[in-house]
Image (cartoon, rainbow, N blue to C red; front, side, top):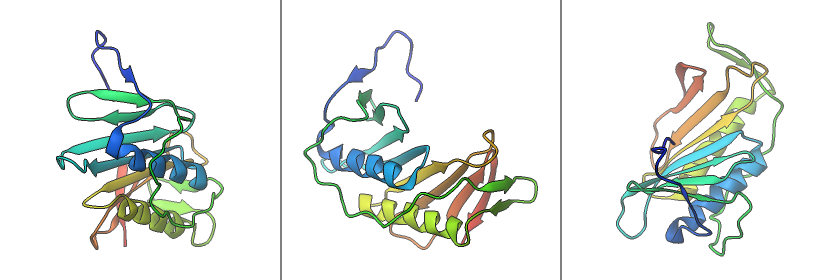
Length: 166
């Protein structure tokens, strides 16, 4: 998340009501082996959107609209983590962007897609969750995006190409 060079990003140990979302994304990241987990969530008080971005081995960034703050990745949070799906780490997928193919563990893509949708649901409201996973082609990560509370297909991105997964 870009920030003007003259503004330092504030490091905090809590983002209040968003601590549950931070904890959920961090836990999902660790359980799934994702490279990154990001969510657009409503703030409980004013329902304004916030973006929570949790990368592997990186501080958690929270874009509150008017400012961006960071939490250390290992910060201890007191907020409860919403129930998350059972999700297991899978080996990297082989991908062919031209053919729109993802090859890997049988049922693996649907397993991760179901997990991302369950993450969005756990975050509540009209949340949108995205997780980025490794592939055998480092230049072409696999991203899965799902919206809570709907029947919309899961968006699959391979590099710059986008597809839908029913």
